Image (cartoon, rainbow, N blue to C red; front, side):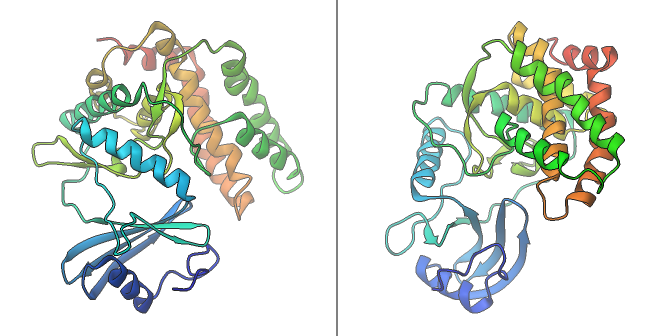
Length: 324
């Protein structure tokens, strides 16, 4: 198989190449490519082979990092969390290494989509708490190459690029973005107490969960971003993805009721953690292939949201979500 097959700059795998992959995993002849989805983090290819329906996932990762992910999946399965293990290929490995990419295959699983119901979001919160508890005593870890976590280095890289875009975007917009740093990231870094840490999922949201007919979480997906950080990030990211300022407060309350009690410090810093996520998307848009358009779009949606969260009313609403 061509080792350069899966570079981001190259086309998605052809039918013939996917047929070779199917053969290497012993799942029978490839019958149909149902769909191929490529985003900034990975490629997902839904296929039908002779032995059933599968999903091929391709993402940037080295073998040590992948072994760490496998270890985490094993711990979760032992503790009865619903995760899928990748299939083994004919060589006895859980992955194929192709250049800088890792390729894995899992069985396709059926379920019901997210609908913002109270029962679904409560189940999501309960499952996340169990996820954190299961992994709270995990020892060493290997960082992901890419992450949604708003680390200082990533934000600084975005800010530096942003400053160099003066003239490409309005100066007032740049000033507004830079002004938010002290209100969000700066305040977080200077005042943040020691918050409970664990292995976090790093991308806990409705698109990475599959629900049963009874609206319980029946599968957790996508573990490329797992890392060690404050558990509050997963909670904040889940709330952020629920669009809490757009009429989904019942779902947000149900999620927090499902997750359970937070520490006093976590409740106080939850609004800031949510702001850091939106600020991350603004900053990293400056690092994209089309920074001007990306930055314009992200600024338009995230800047008002950050200002709302930072307002007295916004902070009160978010903290009130944590009241049992």
